[in-house]
Each structure stands twice: as C-alpha cells, then as structure tokens.
Image (cartoon, rainbow, N blue to C red):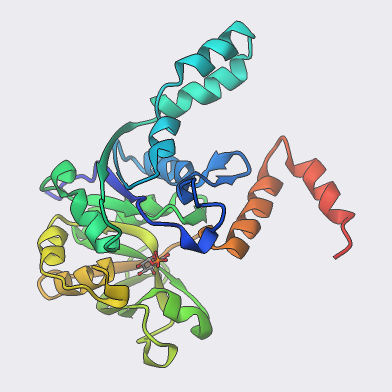
Length: 294
Ligand code: G1P
C-alpha cells in the first residue's frame, strides 16, 4: 500500500532580498496578491489537494505569518459588533483553514536545510513541499496533479516547466525521459539527473523545477548527507540527486500558469491577472486598464 500524503511543508524563512525594501520588516510570504498573502494561495492549493496538516518553517521577523493564520479575537469582535458578517466569515475561515505547526530555521542555510528542519514534525511519512513564491493558477491544483502521480508510483515527484534557455540558470534543472502514462499526454517524466542553477550552456535541458514537490521520507537521510552546494547552501535539488541513486523520481509538466511572485515583475503580472479574474474587481479593473496609455 502506498502511504497517503497528509502533510505539506512551507519553507518561509528566506530573507526575501529580491523584494527589498518591501521585505525589510515584512515577510515576503505576506505580500498580498490583490487581498490575500502569497502563502495563503499555497495553503489553499494544499487544502484543495487533500492536505490536512501544514508545517511552516519560519525564521526571524516572520511572526506576521503566525498571526495571520491565528484567531484574531479583537478583529472578530469588532466585525461582529458592526454586523460585518461577510468580512467576519473571511477572517474566521483563515484560522479554521487547516492545522498548522511551526518550526524555526535559525539560519538561512538553504532550501534543503529548511526541509530538514521539518523532519520531526513530518515524521517517517511522505509529504509535500510548497514554495509560496511560485503561485500557480490552474483548474486542477498543481499539488493534486503531482499527488496523482505519487499515488500511482509511490515515488518522489517534482513539478516541471519548460523555460527559455536564457532564464534556465535561475532554476533547478532536470535531465528526464518521457514516460507514457494514460491521461498524461507526454507530460510525465522519469528524472535522470538534477542540477541546481546550472550555467545556461551546462543545463541538461530546458526543463526547470517549479516549487511543488512530493517527497518520500528518505529525502531526510539524503539531505543529511548533502553538502552545501550553490551559494554555500544545502540545496533540495542536490538532496534529490542523492535520493535518485536509490529511488526513482518522477517529474510532471503541470497544467496551469505559474507566476514567480518572489520577483517584482512576476508579482505585478500575477496581481493584474488575479485581479482581472475577480468577480468583484474584474470588470472595473479591466475598464481602468483599457484607458491606460501604455
Ligand atoms: C528554488 C529551488 C530551485 C527551483 C526554484 C523554483 O530556488 O532551489 O531548484 O527551481 O525554487 O522556483 P529559488 O527560486 O528559491 O532560488
């Protein structure tokens, strides 16, 4: 029997340097896309995919994340007394969303290190990892697409996306062979190798890893044995490469649109697209954009 994935880990201890000065005193995970913080998009995707427990790996200056998912008595009381039921509902649903546990990553030693910090809270079971910078708009949640593959093979699975060669060195990159599989239309791959942020000329392909992973618990031992790589950090990609020596890893070219919301331009694009899709804002916003001189 293939064990069920119940937990999702959200690394959120990064310094957010790509978004300074906004992130000097505010976690980048709390930057709002329209009216919801980035991390909430990821958590909602996890819940819609069937995840019941969330582990957030935080660091210094990240208490706003904990407060956001906690009950706010004062705010609820105020909204209740003013009869603002819709808003009350919206605020309450955040704290009711899912069971969240927190663990600190005291030093920013890399994504692989952040995952290792969640080891005790995850225990010996498979889990998902979600990077909330990568916001994915799709009909079927991206994590669910990965879980479908995990539930068939019982192996680790990463999300893949083709990116232009001149951007490839910003990503973990895979060498992978297509695997025929019903309903996947050539989007399923067996990973042969992984490299973290290679130079464009050394990249094994144009297929980048995007921030959604299903990981079997052997990743913890693999990460334990992984030495610091790119940027002197313990990289998850290197841990996966280590894992690949003993276990198969699959990749899924997911269906949907991904926004790099950790980047200023990507964040602006996501803001516009998500605002246009909103029932309450879409029409007036479209109207406003139409009249812009660009
Ligand atoms: C991380 C991973 C990288 C992956 C990327 C996806 O890099 O290390 O392998 O391709 O996320 O967004 P980061 O963007 O945090 O530097």
